[in-house]
Length: 501
Ligand SMILES: *[C@@H]1O[C@H](CO)[C@@H](O)[C@H](O)[C@H]1NC(C)=O
Ligand SMILES: *[C@@H]1O[C@H](CO)[C@@H](O)[C@H](O)[C@H]1NC(C)=O
Ligand SMILES: *[C@@H]1O[C@H](CO)[C@@H](O)[C@H](O)[C@H]1NC(C)=O
Ligand SMILES: *[C@@H]1O[C@H](CO)[C@@H](O)[C@H](O)[C@H]1NC(C)=O
Image (cartoon, rainbow, N blue to C red):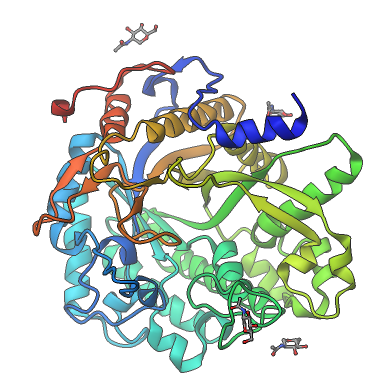
């Protein structure tokens, strides 16, 4: 079979098991390893305009359009029911995010008592069911007030406001929350939101971007934003370490979006492209966090458009994390594109001098190819290049079109999860310092990039026709539960009956 056919077969043949550890169970994982599932505030809570919450930059992404009004699963009202489902499923940990504009409606200033009450309730409910809270402070949802006031993450003023917000969270919740992440997928947020204009806050400039943005500068802003994120993160980590960590004994992390790169030839040229793309994707954030500066290739190609760390900032950023959170879904093929460096006006991708083809399949097939080697490779890469830091896999999961007749029958999701958990086990056996794995997502929620409520990653289905939004376990929830409760997993494992949860 030719290379191209192999590649196509790989991308299209999504349901063939490729598990290399033949069978496994939870007992094969180290003691203390946590299995969980995750969501984010904007996608799961609902109650967007209630009890004092003000909009975030993400809210407009879920505005009604084309005759569809997105229906969130209303976890704000149904957290007790959801935590009960988590306990029934047997997850050790729940990853969720705090909505900054619910807790501090104008981004800075007084705390909203109803927001405070909600997160206290949720956290207490989790703790009383023995479930560890893992909290993300910024899951792509800056308060719109700060975006409007001074441009949000583009402006250095964000550092102080972010620290003040984090301080409130540590003070109010840190006696019970031990796992804090500052900023979600900082690399994707910076390029998606400020270069491609594909996600909030939808900034870009011609000729870059997937649409005509009304504001932004694709040449400079992604770099400024990532820089401010690193400084906000590092200042916050310092604050936590000085003021809280001795008393509260929690950990502070930083989250990046990852993909592995599939090698197509064995050439030296390809080595160089892959290294460059890895430096732009991982190194942009991990290199400063581990070594105190951006990768040399980024500084060379972006020139004066990438900000410089002062000595003080470099020391502040270096080592400012206890763990790295990663999001992982699929892999890419990359192609050298040296010509882009001759362009006068360049963006992040032109500076990267490569075209990146991120693999997703088309509906009605599952969204993502099953390529567990990708997760394996990402974990190896972080181990080898960045000194094997503790890792939490905070997102991994399979997207499927939601068809009301087959909403619960999500076998391709089971295939995806089984293969990736198997790959994770292999990585652990080869020395990876991964400490936890979280399925995205616990429940069907408002997904980006597809029509809301037509497409989902959830283990639990939400009946949108029911005014009570009743939840139902999909086969994947039952499969995960069986694994969490000690069942053996093989490529042929039998999905338990619906009545068992
Ligand atoms: C942007 O606007 C120009 C001029 O109006 C138009 O030709 C182009 O197709 C638009 N591009 C996109 C991606 O909408
Ligand atoms: C973006 O910034 C670059 C570098 O400062 C500048 O040359 C370019 O004109 C700016 N583009 C826009 C659209 O403002
Ligand atoms: C296992 O780890 C070793 C040492 O870090 C590394 O050299 C090797 O490539 C890893 N094996 C695989 C299959 O990734
Ligand atoms: C799982 O497999 C192991 C090894 O084959 C076996 O000893 C154990 O009894 C199995 N457990 C269950 C719950 O089937």
